[in-house]
Image (cartoon, rainbow, N blue to C red; front, top):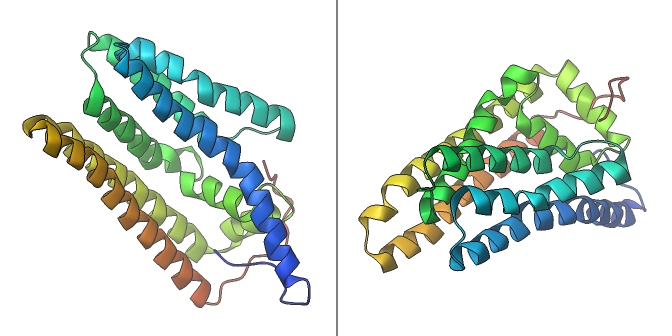
Length: 233
Protein backbone atom coordinates (compact mmCIF):
# COMPACT_ATOMS: atom_id res chain seq x y z
CA UNK A 1 0.00 0.00 0.00
CA UNK A 2 1.10 3.54 -0.48
CA UNK A 3 1.31 6.31 2.05
CA UNK A 4 -0.98 9.21 1.28
CA UNK A 5 0.50 11.49 3.92
CA UNK A 6 2.69 14.32 2.76
CA UNK A 7 6.27 14.40 3.91
CA UNK A 8 6.32 17.61 5.85
CA UNK A 9 7.23 18.60 9.35
CA UNK A 10 4.17 16.81 10.71
CA UNK A 11 5.00 13.50 9.08
CA UNK A 12 6.19 11.96 12.33
CA UNK A 13 3.09 12.95 14.29
CA UNK A 14 0.91 11.87 11.35
CA UNK A 15 2.50 8.44 11.33
CA UNK A 16 2.10 8.18 15.10
CA UNK A 17 -1.56 9.20 14.85
CA UNK A 18 -2.17 6.65 12.11
CA UNK A 19 -0.52 3.91 14.16
CA UNK A 20 -2.69 4.88 17.13
CA UNK A 21 -5.84 4.75 14.98
CA UNK A 22 -4.88 1.35 13.58
CA UNK A 23 -4.22 0.02 17.08
CA UNK A 24 -7.58 1.26 18.35
CA UNK A 25 -9.34 -0.22 15.33
CA UNK A 26 -7.58 -3.57 15.06
CA UNK A 27 -6.82 -4.18 18.74
CA UNK A 28 -10.40 -5.09 19.77
CA UNK A 29 -10.86 -7.08 16.57
CA UNK A 30 -7.75 -9.18 17.13
CA UNK A 31 -8.67 -9.67 20.80
CA UNK A 32 -12.33 -10.60 20.33
CA UNK A 33 -12.20 -12.33 16.94
CA UNK A 34 -8.90 -14.21 17.25
CA UNK A 35 -7.28 -14.35 20.70
CA UNK A 36 -10.32 -14.87 22.94
CA UNK A 37 -12.01 -17.43 20.62
CA UNK A 38 -8.78 -19.45 20.44
CA UNK A 39 -8.26 -19.39 24.20
CA UNK A 40 -11.91 -20.11 24.94
CA UNK A 41 -12.09 -23.04 22.54
CA UNK A 42 -9.04 -24.72 24.02
CA UNK A 43 -10.28 -24.07 27.56
CA UNK A 44 -13.62 -25.65 26.70
CA UNK A 45 -11.95 -28.57 24.93
CA UNK A 46 -9.79 -29.14 28.02
CA UNK A 47 -12.99 -29.47 30.04
CA UNK A 48 -14.55 -31.95 27.65
CA UNK A 49 -16.68 -29.51 25.62
CA UNK A 50 -16.00 -30.17 21.93
CA UNK A 51 -17.55 -29.69 18.54
CA UNK A 52 -20.71 -27.69 17.94
CA UNK A 53 -21.40 -26.60 21.57
CA UNK A 54 -17.86 -25.24 21.99
CA UNK A 55 -17.90 -23.46 18.64
CA UNK A 56 -21.27 -21.85 19.35
CA UNK A 57 -20.00 -20.58 22.70
CA UNK A 58 -16.80 -19.31 21.12
CA UNK A 59 -18.75 -17.44 18.42
CA UNK A 60 -20.13 -15.14 21.11
CA UNK A 61 -16.78 -13.28 21.17
CA UNK A 62 -16.74 -12.11 17.54
CA UNK A 63 -20.50 -11.49 17.70
CA UNK A 64 -19.91 -9.15 20.65
CA UNK A 65 -17.06 -7.43 18.80
CA UNK A 66 -19.16 -6.91 15.66
CA UNK A 67 -21.99 -5.41 17.72
CA UNK A 68 -19.69 -3.07 19.64
CA UNK A 69 -17.85 -2.03 16.49
CA UNK A 70 -21.11 -1.20 14.74
CA UNK A 71 -22.35 0.78 17.75
CA UNK A 72 -19.15 2.83 17.81
CA UNK A 73 -18.44 3.25 14.09
CA UNK A 74 -21.87 2.73 12.47
CA UNK A 75 -20.45 0.18 10.04
CA UNK A 76 -19.78 -3.53 10.05
CA UNK A 77 -16.38 -4.95 10.98
CA UNK A 78 -15.69 -7.14 7.93
CA UNK A 79 -13.05 -9.26 9.63
CA UNK A 80 -15.10 -9.89 12.76
CA UNK A 81 -18.11 -10.80 10.62
CA UNK A 82 -15.98 -13.25 8.64
CA UNK A 83 -14.79 -14.97 11.83
CA UNK A 84 -18.32 -15.06 13.24
CA UNK A 85 -19.77 -16.56 10.05
CA UNK A 86 -16.95 -19.10 9.83
CA UNK A 87 -17.54 -20.21 13.42
CA UNK A 88 -21.26 -20.65 12.79
CA UNK A 89 -20.52 -22.72 9.68
CA UNK A 90 -17.98 -24.70 11.67
CA UNK A 91 -20.56 -25.38 14.37
CA UNK A 92 -23.06 -26.53 11.75
CA UNK A 93 -20.47 -28.83 10.19
CA UNK A 94 -19.55 -30.19 13.62
CA UNK A 95 -23.18 -30.91 14.41
CA UNK A 96 -23.68 -32.59 11.03
CA UNK A 97 -20.59 -34.70 11.69
CA UNK A 98 -22.05 -36.12 14.86
CA UNK A 99 -19.68 -34.30 17.20
CA UNK A 100 -16.57 -35.98 15.80
CA UNK A 101 -14.92 -32.66 14.90
CA UNK A 102 -12.25 -32.09 17.53
CA UNK A 103 -8.75 -30.80 18.17
CA UNK A 104 -6.56 -30.25 15.13
CA UNK A 105 -9.36 -31.22 12.76
CA UNK A 106 -11.49 -28.36 14.10
CA UNK A 107 -8.64 -25.91 13.56
CA UNK A 108 -8.11 -27.27 10.05
CA UNK A 109 -11.79 -27.02 9.17
CA UNK A 110 -11.97 -23.45 10.46
CA UNK A 111 -8.90 -22.47 8.42
CA UNK A 112 -10.45 -24.12 5.38
CA UNK A 113 -13.64 -22.11 5.82
CA UNK A 114 -11.61 -18.90 5.94
CA UNK A 115 -9.83 -19.98 2.75
CA UNK A 116 -13.15 -20.58 1.03
CA UNK A 117 -14.33 -17.12 2.13
CA UNK A 118 -11.27 -15.56 0.49
CA UNK A 119 -11.74 -17.65 -2.64
CA UNK A 120 -15.39 -16.76 -3.22
CA UNK A 121 -15.24 -13.12 -2.10
CA UNK A 122 -14.52 -11.69 -5.61
CA UNK A 123 -17.91 -13.01 -6.70
CA UNK A 124 -19.50 -10.49 -4.30
CA UNK A 125 -17.99 -7.40 -5.89
CA UNK A 126 -14.62 -6.86 -4.27
CA UNK A 127 -12.15 -9.35 -2.78
CA UNK A 128 -11.60 -9.56 0.94
CA UNK A 129 -8.10 -8.14 0.79
CA UNK A 130 -9.54 -4.92 -0.59
CA UNK A 131 -11.71 -4.47 2.50
CA UNK A 132 -9.01 -5.53 4.93
CA UNK A 133 -6.39 -3.41 3.19
CA UNK A 134 -8.67 -0.36 3.16
CA UNK A 135 -9.37 -0.71 6.84
CA UNK A 136 -5.68 -1.07 7.68
CA UNK A 137 -4.60 1.79 5.41
CA UNK A 138 -7.48 4.15 6.03
CA UNK A 139 -9.59 2.81 8.90
CA UNK A 140 -12.71 4.38 7.43
CA UNK A 141 -11.27 7.89 7.47
CA UNK A 142 -11.09 10.29 4.53
CA UNK A 143 -8.24 8.18 3.14
CA UNK A 144 -10.81 5.43 2.51
CA UNK A 145 -12.13 7.54 -0.38
CA UNK A 146 -8.68 7.45 -1.97
CA UNK A 147 -8.57 3.68 -1.47
CA UNK A 148 -11.94 3.44 -3.22
CA UNK A 149 -10.57 5.68 -5.96
CA UNK A 150 -7.68 3.31 -6.54
CA UNK A 151 -10.11 0.44 -7.01
CA UNK A 152 -12.25 2.41 -9.47
CA UNK A 153 -9.41 3.90 -11.52
CA UNK A 154 -6.44 1.53 -11.34
CA UNK A 155 -6.51 -1.84 -13.08
CA UNK A 156 -3.11 -2.60 -11.52
CA UNK A 157 -4.51 -2.02 -8.05
CA UNK A 158 -7.44 -4.33 -8.73
CA UNK A 159 -5.08 -6.99 -10.06
CA UNK A 160 -3.00 -6.75 -6.88
CA UNK A 161 -6.08 -7.26 -4.70
CA UNK A 162 -7.16 -10.29 -6.71
CA UNK A 163 -3.67 -11.81 -6.48
CA UNK A 164 -3.47 -11.23 -2.73
CA UNK A 165 -6.91 -12.69 -2.18
CA UNK A 166 -5.95 -15.76 -4.21
CA UNK A 167 -2.72 -16.11 -2.20
CA UNK A 168 -4.48 -15.88 1.15
CA UNK A 169 -7.23 -18.25 0.06
CA UNK A 170 -4.77 -20.79 -1.31
CA UNK A 171 -2.58 -20.52 1.78
CA UNK A 172 -5.51 -21.19 4.11
CA UNK A 173 -6.77 -24.10 2.03
CA UNK A 174 -3.34 -25.71 1.74
CA UNK A 175 -2.77 -25.34 5.48
CA UNK A 176 -6.21 -26.78 6.22
CA UNK A 177 -5.60 -29.76 3.94
CA UNK A 178 -2.20 -30.56 5.42
CA UNK A 179 -3.34 -30.12 9.02
CA UNK A 180 -6.42 -32.27 8.48
CA UNK A 181 -4.43 -35.17 7.05
CA UNK A 182 -0.94 -35.06 8.55
CA UNK A 183 -1.20 -34.62 12.37
CA UNK A 184 -3.60 -37.53 12.98
CA UNK A 185 -1.01 -39.81 11.33
CA UNK A 186 1.81 -38.64 13.60
CA UNK A 187 2.74 -39.42 17.22
CA UNK A 188 1.30 -36.98 19.75
CA UNK A 189 4.48 -34.92 20.18
CA UNK A 190 5.11 -34.60 16.46
CA UNK A 191 1.46 -33.78 15.85
CA UNK A 192 1.61 -30.94 18.38
CA UNK A 193 4.76 -29.59 16.73
CA UNK A 194 3.16 -29.82 13.28
CA UNK A 195 0.01 -28.04 14.49
CA UNK A 196 2.16 -25.14 15.68
CA UNK A 197 4.71 -25.01 12.86
CA UNK A 198 2.31 -25.54 9.94
CA UNK A 199 0.15 -22.44 10.43
CA UNK A 200 3.20 -20.33 11.31
CA UNK A 201 5.03 -21.32 8.12
CA UNK A 202 2.02 -20.70 5.88
CA UNK A 203 1.18 -17.39 7.55
CA UNK A 204 4.79 -16.21 7.27
CA UNK A 205 4.89 -17.11 3.58
CA UNK A 206 1.62 -15.34 2.76
CA UNK A 207 2.50 -12.25 4.83
CA UNK A 208 5.89 -12.06 3.12
CA UNK A 209 4.22 -12.31 -0.29
CA UNK A 210 1.74 -9.60 0.71
CA UNK A 211 4.54 -7.28 1.85
CA UNK A 212 6.54 -7.92 -1.34
CA UNK A 213 3.48 -7.27 -3.50
CA UNK A 214 2.74 -4.04 -1.65
CA UNK A 215 6.30 -2.80 -2.09
CA UNK A 216 6.26 -3.70 -5.76
CA UNK A 217 3.01 -1.80 -6.25
CA UNK A 218 4.38 1.25 -4.42
CA UNK A 219 7.58 1.11 -6.51
CA UNK A 220 5.50 1.12 -9.69
CA UNK A 221 4.67 4.77 -9.01
CA UNK A 222 0.98 4.27 -8.23
CA UNK A 223 -0.45 6.84 -5.82
CA UNK A 224 -3.84 7.05 -4.15
CA UNK A 225 -6.43 8.61 -6.39
CA UNK A 226 -8.27 11.76 -5.52
CA UNK A 227 -11.13 11.28 -3.06
CA UNK A 228 -14.12 9.72 -4.75
CA UNK A 229 -17.78 9.93 -3.95
CA UNK A 230 -17.92 6.18 -3.34
CA UNK A 231 -19.10 5.26 0.16
CA UNK A 232 -16.37 4.45 2.65
CA UNK A 233 -18.24 1.87 4.64
